[in-house]
Image 1 (cartoon, one colour):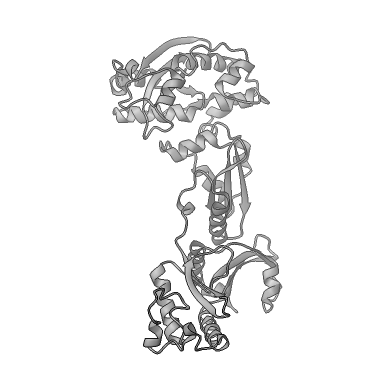
Image 2 (tube, rainbow, N blue to C red; image 1 turned 60 degrees about the vertical axis):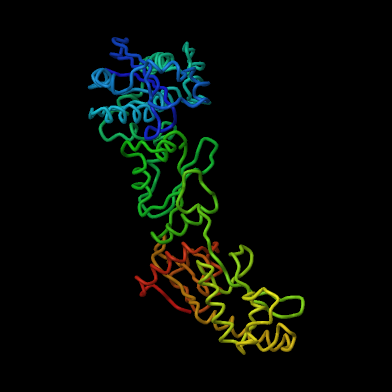
Length: 455
């Protein structure tokens, strides 16, 4: 027996929204044998845009039962039947959540009429319920109401039953089938094609835009994990509604997958990635020449297109390091922007500044000290290569850090010597550096010193 269900709700995910209407048609494979229909008080206001779409208003729900009041009836009518709906995971997540809140433990096999329609009626431009009804000449009344949409889904399901010559329903219900958990709009072929190796994967929406980027030690296993369980939060529900395609990039190692994921999130800014989309609050020490010919050191927020001498997480951390350099190399507080008032240079008082701010020290003399300070800083920044296995047996993976910053990564032939760093760099893809990436690399280098080559 099949329970063909449609619900209306106050929002897009069960954890923060409620059901406002539910309709259930029990179908024996030939005809409808039982029905259930009710408005439901969701315990929260119905947003205006949803009122406009469904016609269900707060006033209509004032006398409606809460879900807990009808949970026993719903549980009994659903128990033992196959749950059928258009975009089944959406309806199923809401009903299961509400039944559990009412004290009922329930689960069911599921059939999605979107996925089944794609298999039984291939080639349609759209598989929304409205468009399918137009394509298949199914009458649909009371659109965007549970009763009307459920009745149309019954007629759609009957057409699927009568045209399912390749056993799509049987395959979807088969034990171990991924059909019941996959997003409605994602062809199963994408999952079958995924490799069981490290790399980065991309979820695309209907317009082919990347909406999520993830990393994995095993791409196939990690992608499958997104669709397991009944998570009612907005992240998973967003996946279920919007994933139409999966692509991927293979990497040789887990570390390269971690790095590439961070790079791609910053490049693509996907809708459903959260953690690494925040802007890094990072500062850099920069050098430039002023109109008088003096080299100036300045601590500023990180600039994309200007090479920094030194990076730091906190402004106070960078300022303290700059003060140390000023004292150690007899630089000027004012020319290093450590003092901006009109008072005499405090470095003159402390006998560290030799008068560059008052033109008592020539640009040539002062600039030599600045360059010595820069050389001192750079001498403490490590340059090294991390080598590991390659994707191909005749190659090895290579991650390059140059003067304390991530340069790039790629693959080089196993027999290549590493004495010419410019040749190595020419074979790598250069990527933008970030604090997060350097943290990953430094952690790995500290734990795997046998794979690190200093240069």
